[in-house]
Length: 180
Ligand SMILES: Cc1cc2nc3c(=O)[nH]c(=O)nc-3n(C[C@H](O)[C@H](O)[C@H](O)COP(=O)(O)O)c2cc1C
Image (cartoon, rainbow, N blue to C red):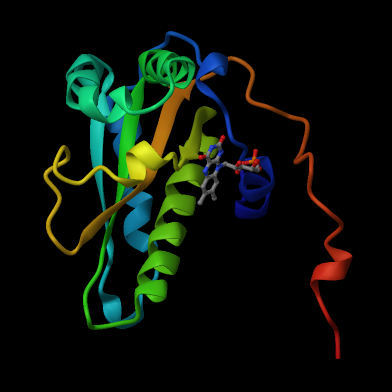
């Protein structure tokens, strides 16, 4: 599939759409390593990832015990179900420094995430980027450094029916470009 087709194909695929098929470490790595091709100002490479594979999700749930205790009961049980239905959970970590402005680190981190997301889409592996307050606040639980921030997580799972209803909700592109 060429790059334009993969960009058009990429969608948010949610845990209820995931099958029980496992994803190997190699499959995860082949999408994850695409992050390394993201550009960054002064090559600060302001991103890293913490991956919980299927067998480590119970450990993750233990780790999140206190964080999830603070959210409403219904939301908490939905979150646990989503984590349990996933084949891997990838925490997105942004590394900041005084070398470049923070927004540039955010931009580069997001480009790295897009690369991973496209890598999964190309292989029909579903994923979506979730940024709930409980995840954004994770720091101690993930053992992050002082200069690091959690920018949410990717829920990941294989799917038998990758969405094909191409991009609902998007407004016309026409109004987004001004030609002069
Ligand atoms: C930075 C970022 C944060 C997001 N956070 C959430 C989230 O917390 N919950 C959620 O359901 N979707 C989240 N999404 C997914 C978007 O809702 C989704 O990409 C959008 O609806 C477009 O759908 P598509 O990905 O299928 O094109 C996030 C996407 C981005 C880029």
